[in-house]
Length: 490
Ligand SMILES: Cc1cc2nc3c(=O)[nH]c(=O)nc-3n(C[C@H](O)[C@H](O)[C@H](O)COP(=O)(O)OP(=O)(O)OC[C@H]3O[C@@H](n4cnc5c(N)ncnc54)[C@H](O)[C@@H]3O)c2cc1C
Image (tube, helix red, strand yellow):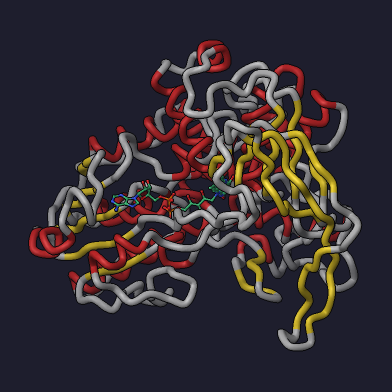
């Protein structure tokens, strides 16, 4: 981990842009940790509706102290007490710990705890410290985990450690959920997932891929076969864009696009050159194409970075909300999560290649314009402004007449958010739903309305973060263990 490759270097391929750990530099950085009296970095508490600090409650100051003294082995032992998979979050986490770091408050330069975490887990793998021994005693109880994203993997890891027989059912051809088929390879190398899954298999976790529960596998059969079931199926339903001409050819949902590219990379043994040169995609090729990404969030950013690598002529990213300030405002004090402008790797790369930041703020699409063959040729946009809606009692974004524009577009990628868990999974198990179409279960015992059925991760809380999915998997495992054994030491 550590320093990022230069923009020029990294856009030529789909290999990870994180560099290998530089242990002496991390040791130096970790020594800046002040072991604060009130370490918000490890609190994971809700402040003003958003989490501040690590949801896993990683013991950040203690771990930093061990890194500062160069004791990476003990640091690994310490982080493993709270964290199932540091190799994932050290690559993809937005680092809530750093946003809540006192050094960030005082000097605007937080301790790079995420990089330290990367160095710890790199060291642990390099020195053969990462082990997953099979449990010495089996309880005779069995659990089916549905979905192998970070929530499912986390639940499976802990339940197996406790001695329960765990079987993970996965709809896709490979394990990993959005770690595998959402987040692109340059941010998270898929071999990182394989390495961990191999350890889990050796320890006794069974993975069954290409098994779509609710379609190929009957929920009722699982309830008969296993003592408990945990649904960790994510929140895949994408939010669509209601604009005229939506049936134009050339419009794709972001995750379908990202999944196709990641799958092609793995099917071609990680040969970036091959997948950049081929036109064998459902969208043909992006070479020389004008790409418009709708949605300014992380998923949209991944689409921008992927389009740059696939040779798009240019990429525009439309965002409904106003541009965030560069620094915290008085209304958003530390240690709240900072609502500031974030320029991510994809936007940086697009600016490098095309000469400007791809984002256009406060703008939405009103029309997808087609040619005579029904192919997309442009999108019509309009600017938005924030107005107070008295009836709704809150600010809403309204269109501003006279600000219409037209942007050339061969391909549109919709990254406009997600609308909850897929209904066939919830209907198959007959579990109650929330108003937001997620599975109804609280975050204390993770029980659904159906006996012996639990839920965790995005399927329960809605589209969120990897670190939250890991935490939910861990807590759901504890709840299942308690319901099976009467107590839990997880
Ligand atoms: C493009 C993209 C990029 C992201 N980038 C980041 C990031 O950088 N950092 C971050 O912290 N978060 C990121 N997120 C969010 C993060 O990936 C999710 O919050 C997290 O993966 C949720 O984990 P999960 O296990 O609940 O669900 P998922 O990861 O969605 O996994 C659910 C799994 O269940 C399987 N499944 C679904 N239905 C069935 C069924 N019926 N039978 C069997 N299997 C089924 C799916 O195939 C999938 O493998 C990103 C999300 C997206 C879409």
